[in-house]
Amino acid sequence: MGEIPFSTLFDPMPEGCIVVDRTLNIVYLNDAARRLFNNREPCLTGSLLIRLHQSVESNKTFLSLLQSENLPQKTEIVLSSAGRKRWIGITLSPLPEGILILASDQTALKKTEKQLRKKKEQNQQSIVELEAVINALPGIVSVVDTHFRVLHANEAAYKQFGQNSLGEILGKTCYSVRKGLKNPCPQCNLIKAFTDGEPKIRVSTPEEEKMMGIATKAFAVPLFDKKGKIWG
Image (cartoon, rainbow, N blue to C red; front, side, top):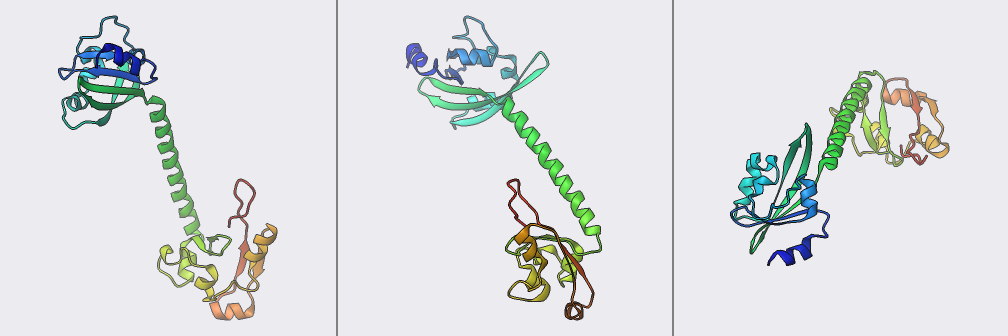
């Protein structure tokens, strides 16, 4: 395959396309590759690949993969110039003439991934802090879905239910965990809250106080998703 077929195949592509021979001399590169590596030298064909950009020569992993017989391979290189860094995703594929290098700018993706990681870390920290506050409350706090399954609870809740860890009650119905029932409690605040979407308060009956050994005041507050649908 010569220069004309390479041009026909790769000139229209938005990715940077570079073909090198086994001695890493450039056989072909399209305009997208020139723009990506910020190199406008007119006579790069026949030159060593490291002439394309100074960061190429310093990337030992990339150069090592180019010498590998185990292709295709994927990697990335960081281009540094004028104090600015860009992450370039690289795919290496074998050709009869040598190696096809497909390159694309992954900088925006890297920044998005970094922002997502930071957001995830912040969310995890917020969860840890929130759980610390909930667990510090002496009262029972639990979150259930509209099928009465326990999604979360504080230490006071699962200990009151006679369990040693949260994992022992997760996914179970609140009425089975708390009272050993097969169906929701007849006076359950949750049923009313799920029905009209309003917070409810209920004081325990003498029978319940005798069974549990304590008097309780139960608050049921419905939780809504972004569409206004009650989920718990």
